[in-house]
Length: 336
Image (cartoon, rainbow, N blue to C red; front, side):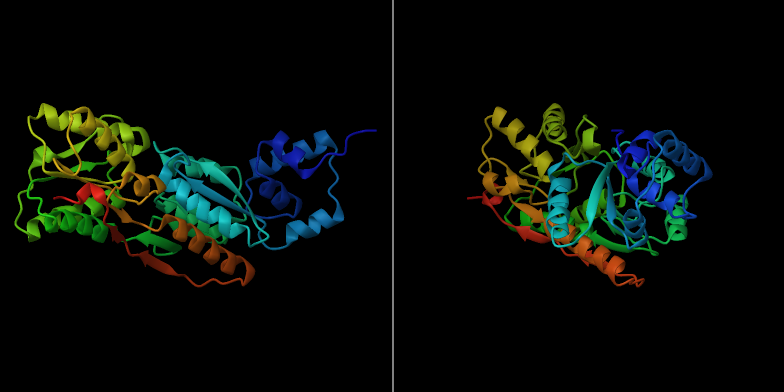
């Protein structure tokens, strides 16, 4: 008996998403002519005959949410994805993950959209340029941004300026006078605002901003938000001849690397040097790391709640929410 091919087989042969095959079958205008031809060729090659109930399913509301993000291996993105996954359990929606990579996520996102516009899209920590925003607006699909801003779309964005300010103020109030910072390689709204908040609080309290203590590591993986970059930052400070009394890391992964480097130097935390992270990943609790809580898991759930409302209720209003950070005080800044 000949094998009965499915829509999944067509998507595989045409090298497109399942949602793209559905759009071609239903005459959607949001598929390029080249993609339509590839899908039709695959249909002919497989002698695919869609079932009536499959066509009905395809005509219903969005079934699959695409989640585009620069990485799914970092603790930060893992926490957001956990919130997304757990909230989706309460819906009849499925999701696929598209990893754009951190080198040039905007261009990679365009390539993903070239293969077909998804039913709904959640974009994490990727800025939208004019070309992408125009394509998404013309497609008319539900879109939610997390960790990025755009006037025309729903978004959840962290108050990174306040987070940097809170981190610096905490170290100052713990009595540290000579404070350094481990920066990221990327220059982005997130990184710039976090650093600006930190620099502003030093200025507010009339503390020196010594450039030799504002350091980024060598490793560019994850744009410098990595354990390796944190470790390397300490080596660079040592080469410059001095270490500060306390260090603010722009994420917890960097802080883990800093902690390892300081222990190799036989320096005690917090007795010899204070350490502050950012994100409040799960490991931070068990390491006793003072940090800034971004509520990543909660934001992941909120983003799905918003997308679900847009899909189920055909809600076209725009909701833009700023997430307030929270200081978490633990042992690494518990100076005697």
